[in-house]
Image 1: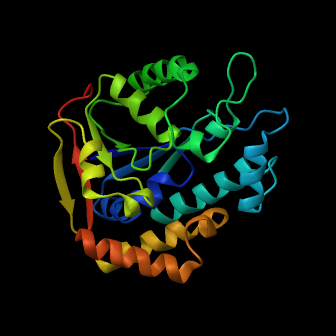
Image 2: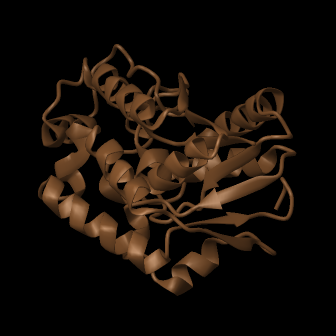
Length: 249
């Protein structure tokens, strides 16, 4: 069986499904993690919002994508997954036809995708239809947390005529109520539970820790990450995905 995880950013699929990916590969399945928003930032000056995020991450804006790609490759190699890095820049770097940045604050980041991105979503949908094999199981984010890049990826995948599976976006899932999760599920989605062994959870944590530039954005240190992820796996009883009824939902 081939699984293809569409990851908006260079950590989302591993953060959300690392233990399951490890178990799938151990069972003989092949896994590809395709990160969509892995393109280089524009050569022009960064927005004040982007500069503030670079400072928080402790990385230079000119090297941030290279560093994060290296982290992602390290995590994928550790798990045994294949990887593919797309050329779309993160939303904090994207602008409209006039060159005005589209997302300039945390509120923008977790709001509604700009109407100026409609052609981008259409182009991604065509790319998915041309590139993703129908026989593979395509796994996309539910968009818990409402990050605009997660929404863009899901909307494009749903516009393509492909069957889809869905994962709960972590760490946003930890802050989402059951009601919020249900609201994100496509109509007729079917829950699948995947039991995980302790070794899969351990390897999930180790893979997550490979994204060193992002660690303190969500956890105080690796010990906090470890405790949280073990508790999360216990609460879920392993890992979960939702199977959609069809490609267009």
